[in-house]
Length: 104
Image: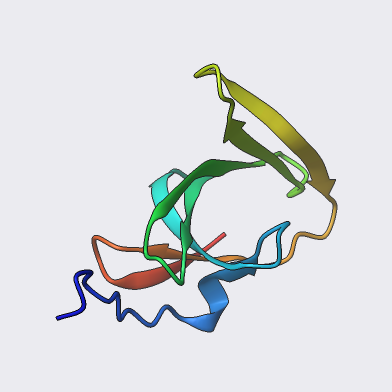
């Protein structure tokens, strides 16, 4: 044993995103409904959840609004990105509880 337990989890390619710093992150489901999904990001190398998360909202025209929220040093949360996709890309999000990939 090397003092630290190695994380050996293979996430489906559909759930892998590349963060702003170029690191691979897995999208991990927090909650979902008919017209929304909330997911956090897990650092694939360390196996640790990152503090940031995304909220996707689907409007009546089928467009997707994405809000990326990150924690600040002062304990608040800040929306750092807001985009609207008229032709949304299909995103895979890992549902850890059911060990499956959900799509939104």
